[in-house]
Length: 505
Ligand SMILES: Cc1cc2nc3c(=O)[nH]c(=O)nc-3n(C[C@H](O)[C@H](O)[C@H](O)COP(=O)(O)OP(=O)(O)OC[C@H]3O[C@@H](n4cnc5c(N)ncnc54)[C@H](O)[C@@H]3O)c2cc1C
Image 1: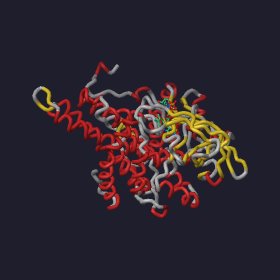
Image 2: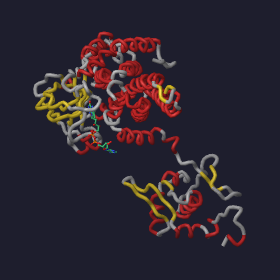
Image 3: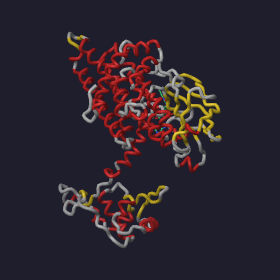
Image 4: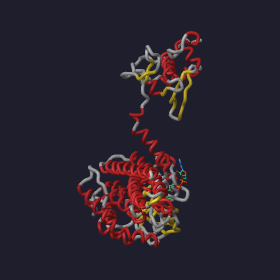
């Protein structure tokens, strides 16, 4: 595995070791998939090596190699789709959530168990709550020093085989709590808790030997001590956990994308058609080049995201953007690797078809591509707000066309209808199809407190049109009447130089 210059010596050493370890257990992983056996024996070895504790801090029995270390292990292990997913399951079932939101007592109790290889599961999705995870219906009612959980969960990876279930349930129906996303809480439920059972195991593409299923919680009593964070913290904990999960999913796709190249390139070097190896065919070379591009960019983005996480940064934007890029890259690359390999690519005797399946699953699991894009849109606009301001433009005095304005806007005092209308009219010359935002207008005045009243007055006189949201007036624009009132027709006229004489009617 290629290392990155910012990795610590321990992380570089880990990359070398885990690569060798994966080579060793790979044959058994393939056998387990054919036999549809859960890869317990491999997972046990992973735990013995300490890799299950890669991201657990040293003081709680782990290797302390952070999200970067976690991605290194997942990337290497995801040459093996089933075993790799088990390792991810171990880490998404509470690790990050407990490190960030657990009490000291909970960290001491749960983290060493994760480090030793206790398998976990993350339990969010319900029959009626998928992308709309805030609509969770499972209830958790306080009863003395415990909560009583009732409801069903579905699509849960490691259902039945995990020992520790990180469950989100509804602790309030108060509309105010719901509006503030304070209606959910997070709990750890232990396998074997009375009333907790597996209802069904799903058959899912790419999950030949990994259980995924429906869970039933029938009056399951969970001690108060196993609630993570405060009551009402569930949504906050879930989103932080999902950012970590999405980063690990990216690392999974790195393993798959590497394996696709490992299949397609040597195959094409050995397959002869038209008296030459198929690797010499430009169409195959272009596909392989695309596989390489996607893998290398996916690796940079994934390990950059993990690095930011290890620095304690908010990685909402990076983890979601990288998940979309990596999952889409893995799918495109799997289709192209199969194409390079022709008919052999669609047989189970080579692995690319398996990676095509798991890649598609990751367009859904851990948050759909659409859900991630929603997060990217919202957090992108917030985080990048400074870069997304409307460039201020003015009309060039000789050219008569809009050009970027130098320096800040010249502020005016004593806001009035005439001054605001003049600004709206001037903006018509600069951005004829656009409204001005409230912010665009108010920055022109030393005191813009009366801006709304002025706009309403202009609107009542049909000189301006305004656009309102729940927050109030957001946008405004001069009407035809307003433009006429602000300036004579000639003021708005402009012709390119080559239009002369008669043609300016
Ligand atoms: C293999 C697998 C493993 C999984 N593992 C787990 C697990 O371990 N734990 C767990 O809790 N969950 C797990 N899930 C559940 C997974 O998180 C959900 O399947 C996912 O969030 C989508 O929910 P849904 O399937 O109900 O689709 P729906 O929410 O019904 O969505 C259907 C389609 O509509 C789109 N859509 C929905 N709402 C919007 C919107 N507002 N804007 C745009 N598009 C929208 C979706 O993107 C999707 O394309 C797993 C799922 C799979 C398939």
